[in-house]
Amino acid sequence: MLDSILKELSKTNTTLVAVSKTKPLTAILDMYGQGQRVFGENRVQELVQKYEELPKDIEWHMIGHLQKNKVKYIAPFVSLIHSVESIALLKEIEKQARKQERVIDCLLQFKIAEEDSKFGMQLGDISSFLQSSEFFQFQHVKIVGVMGMATFTHDMVQVREEFRRLKSIYEDLKANVFLENVSFKEISMGMSGDYKIAIEEGSTMVRIGSLLFGSR
Ligand SMILES: *Cc1c(COP(=O)(O)O)cnc(C)c1O
Image 1 (cartoon, protein in one colour):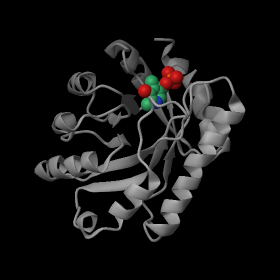
Image 2: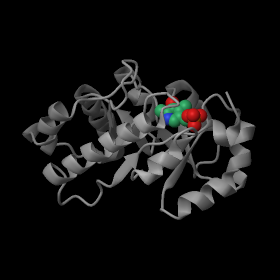
Image 3: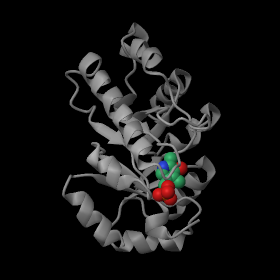
């Protein structure tokens, strides 16, 4: 499975984040043995535990809802946080990354789905913050792109529409805030059920769990 997905992704240079949440260490090691190095988890405790027990050249991505008071546990090692869904959280990541003397790569999560349950920020709010003098002082977070989750539905027309919304948010930020910033280049969208559409709509990073590891 891994091979055929990677082959597909290589055509468009899309990064695979293997979503290993709830899966045992053995399953991750098996994938690791096949060459996969980027893994995503959605719970802090599980992420920390797996980080501690698995090879240190794994790149760990935090993809799930992140509470401010838990940032400190992942700040020492996390390589990308996909789920920055508030300015307050971004400030906390800056603070904890500074303590660790690190720069943490972050994606801004936007709400593109209709459902209320999906987290994310509003473009207007974050856009003005990113142009504020406060943000200008930040030296320990690097915003490398955006992330979004489509509605969980079989209506692929709607899913495509939502991915387009994220792409246009990305384009807006690129044009108005990150114009000369080459690091701002990632669009994290697409999961097991909709990653093909996401790639067609410009995804640079897909987060795939069940298709790789089996259902949870
Ligand atoms: C679980 C999860 C995924 C992967 O979902 P699958 O449908 O198993 O591929 C992707 N993104 C986030 C944020 C998740 O929580």
